[in-house]
Image 1 (tube, rainbow, N blue to C red):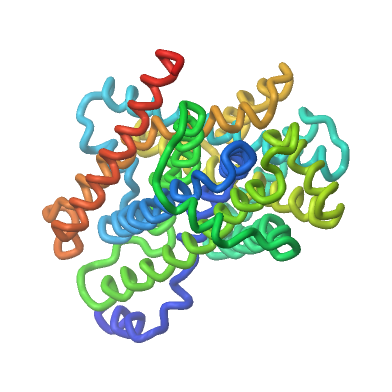
Image 2 (cartoon, rainbow, N blue to C red):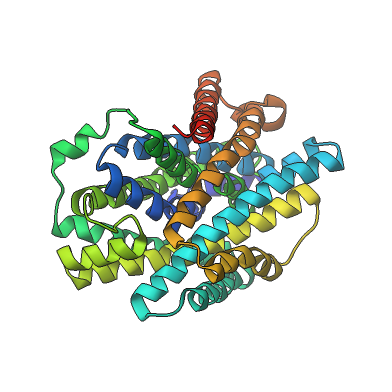
Length: 411
């Protein structure tokens, strides 16, 4: 065993990369697209700082989640299922996590449906069903071919997402000075607070926190303390850095593209309106690439969301639900939204606000567990890591509280 671990420790880190890119798909879902597009079209570059702050926070959170899976051989939901003693408590925790997972699915399926309508003229309901079917096929890759093949497929979709959403900036670069001004933290009204919470909900996604610990568990199992564990953690830091650098760049690009080309243009706060405006200003090719990026985003992220949802149920309720069944159950709310005619982009933004309120329930236990030396041994957080993660959690909770107050008083 020691000899095998020693050989592994001498290998390069490239073969160890991949789980973070799968988790990072959650940061590139249609909810991100809708939130960032709405922010850019309404407020220009005002909320660039929110995207950057959310991405920096996401790096720390995703690393902690991945570390938890590697050092314990268990996912965050599994540990919660053990630590929450009463069944009522586990059910209550699962209920809020399930609501978050359904909000995630609503965003992802709607995004795929809108993309299929833009590309092929399919009705939204038909597009939603087709998105669900394709996501089932992608989940089948994980079940039959293993995590490595699943990671490669989703990485290919991430490449399509990046090309689709960044192409417009290559054709029409934004004013750099104005973009830099958006780094200064500030909010102007209730609408900007709502979109800030939506961006954070889409960036620091609860289901990605649950999923990443499961992804590293599935890929590496339990890593005992020693050279192999240290090599895995170093590789994980690189993996998370690459994944979040890609996600952050794409998210900023979406907001900046909207702030450059869509601000002040009527009807561009919806995905359909943004697509039409891009076609009118930058040409049909850029608009088509935008739609392709949106489709890849929906297909990839809905697969990861279903994986996370199944892990949440198994860990907290101790019941294994086939991914196919899980996919069909969580597909229903999204199809209902499409069937009753709710405006897709508005539904996407609201779904991200729901995700924002679910962040503390995933983040607070994560910080607590990764700081527990009895659980993680020598890999437990340094004191300053715990402080930074706790500050991030408190700021996110405070923003959600401010949002609730503002919406209540109608400011």
